[in-house]
Length: 242
Image 1 (cartoon, rainbow, N blue to C red):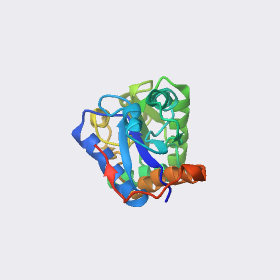
Image 2 (cartoon, rainbow, N blue to C red):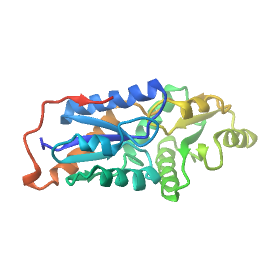
Image 3 (cartoon, rainbow, N blue to C red):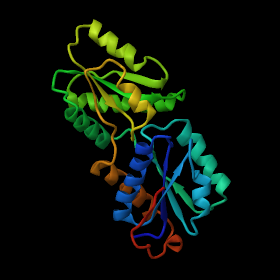
Image 4 (cartoon, rainbow, N blue to C red):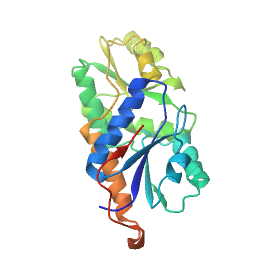
């Protein structure tokens, strides 16, 4: 193992269940790679800058975002600069990724979806076109798994909204409409999906083994690319998740 510490950066939420999900994900990843710290770009702390200031050696920062928008391209790099830490490697965001599409399909089946039912991918939304492009790619990956077109709808920012898309599909003759929650953890956004009028709403991606694998893989690839002089004996597996 490399001595670089993993800093897992999530959005942040006032939902206790959401915070616990991020902490549980950090704990699961720590069992595989060693120390994991958590940071948040909004709502609660520590911020990425604050977390990095507590890392004495090299760090690998993994953005736990399902699409690369403003938070990934602006908030995270700014946090690295503000920290003053000079040995930080930032990985790609988690999504879109085929493994996430596999988890989405699994969550759909758990919600009662059956082949032939209509599916909507519901994302939080973003004004950043790069994030919207990533969500469309995620929908295309899920479409290949459920073998039908999967439209994208947004919960907070952007159009069409999830309720609008549910209504459109029903008007088009769809008998059963299900929502694939393209969210990492429960919170306000996921709660809103239950009010969209769908026949079923899949649970957020959560702490699925495939997601733990993906975070660990992001970290290990980055840590292995560090110069030998930046490596040291890894700490015993533990998590500093909040």
